[in-house]
Length: 293
Image 1 (cartoon, rainbow, N blue to C red):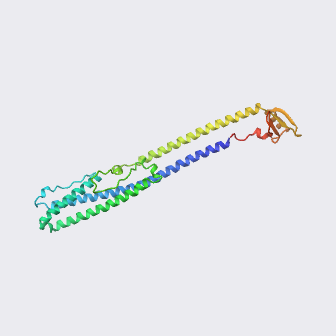
Image 2 (cartoon, helix red, strand yellow):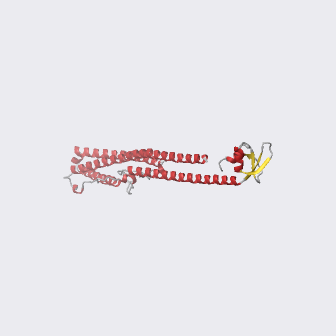
Image 3 (tube, rainbow, N blue to C red):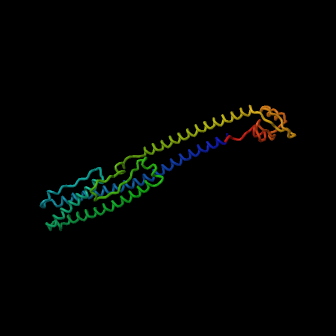
């Protein structure tokens, strides 16, 4: 009986340890994914800052060429406060078109082409475009590191549940719409998701413990019933036994054998055999049988 309960107790301990390990892994993994996702967010934010600088410089260039012929077609660029990949790609196209048109205008007006303000703005725009490309590469590297960690074991099992979506790779000169995936929900606080997940783990652990406990009670009842049934059978069953001279005696009931033991006429080593049986066994094995298999 004690062996069964020891086994069930071991199962309960394993379930508790497994729940603790899972919770620790989830918390540690969350911190790693959160740090990498923040790096992606920061890289994209830097791109937005540089894109706004590009818009500002391009608009300054438009102001600088006012007064020359055909400048009424030059319209100031605008950028949305809610920066996105589509906004940045659109800014790139509009800025390139505007700068190319103004450069063509400068070819017709030598004084504009030689203007210090014009050349300073053109150089600044060129440098900003190079900065934007470098920042795009840094963003894609941060996205690659994040995606690699997100899809590795064990993070792949709970990343989606915590709201960590796949990070896209940014292409500034891509005419096709880009699904920015995780970046669209980057500002969301997913701490509540962690609480929900840990709550679910706790609930599942409690369910496992309840199930194991119910099984323990069920097995205990079965073992107790089996023991009681065997005891009743032994009490009803009659046994032959060998006396001190090794002569068969009986048959007698188990109660009678216990009385003889109390009187010192038999011991736990006295051979006994149930009526109709063929094998002698010590009385002790009948009184205290081992666990039922």
